Length: 83
Image (cartoon, rainbow, N blue to C red; front, side, top):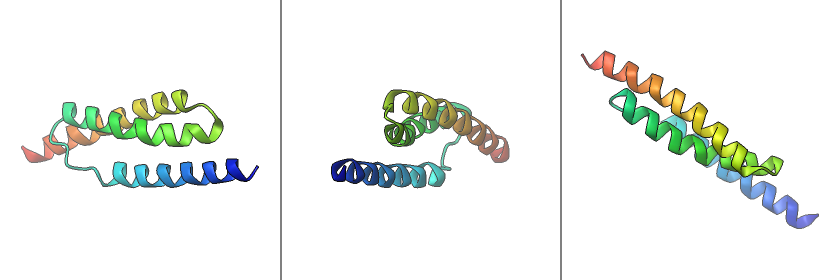
């Protein structure tokens, strides 16, 4: 029981660090860059959160989808504002 609590705490810390990285990433210049960087970072956060429920793969896939979509939107808006 003690080992699982340590593992859960470690996973929460990884998820928080990953979330901070995702939220601080606004340097994407276009939709393509935003999509790929958002998907990469989102999959890391999703993997950390998915490990809490015991399924890292599904968490990583969901995180990649959400992160990619968010990065796509941010990158598109950055590109439009730059014109």
